[in-house]
Image (cartoon, rainbow, N blue to C red; front, side):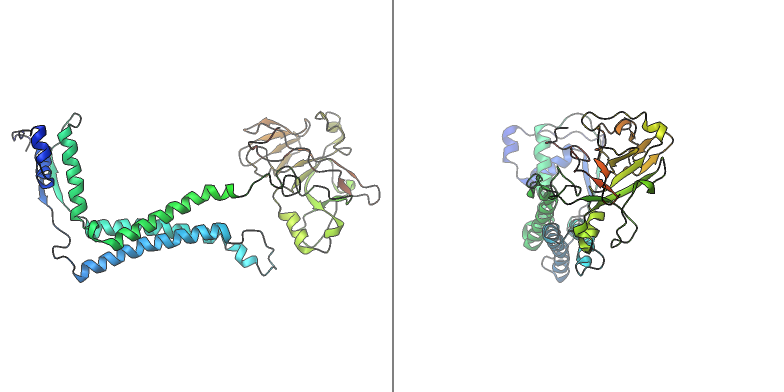
Length: 377
């Protein structure tokens, strides 16, 4: 084929007068293409086999559309708030994430299977041989390529298959709606609408309500068990995770569980060795936030919010296992290694003179966790 003489190019006027079939043949000659096989998948139109294949493809596209709409409904309306194990609503809560995965997975699967079936059942399976050539595309090449694409669209019969066209539009459109809903749902709720209470970004579960004391509580594995912390409970260089507790919640099982599950509640209570406590550098304005050798810092890393679960007593460093950030407990928990750039927020604590247990004197004086646009520190 490479030895064949290149066909004469038509003039601009002749090019405009050529119909699609003529452009199709011309394009093949110009590109050195020889169609060895170009069979029609359904030579006889309207057969039962053709209709059956059309319904199968439409089924998968329709399934994708229904699954995409279900994904949006689940994301917006399915109960996603935590419910304890002994609650009647716990089953629905536990199914929230699986339902998101199943519906989105079915949507993507439906579109993918539909496209594959349409390609296998309706597109002509041509066998062509083509010579390679260099250089850019001339105007005649562009027009002939468009003719080839238009011809492929006509031969596969998409124009006369309304069920497939409608189901494809429905499936892809609904899937696009579902994908678009993912970032938009997070914008439906104003994160600063409740900034003045414990549900806002500026406060945590340690926020004081009235004059009620907020004690430091251990997590024993039993949400109904309330064990408070005294100074003599921790050895020097020890660390323990504590949570807020109010006496008004003692017999409220849901409130006790929520205090342990709320993501911004965990606090590290650290007791330094006496010789290390003498080296502590206090942050300006937080000189009275500790009690003796005891310091309390949020357990939420200031990088991306992972739990800073490790305390290295030999070096007095707080470690975040996610991205290896390290914070110096002797220097107001400022970052000394890793990607974190802000210190851990410190919780002001003291000992209740009436009970002898640790209490928080107030909430954190700054937002905990990662930064956000409106954060000023």
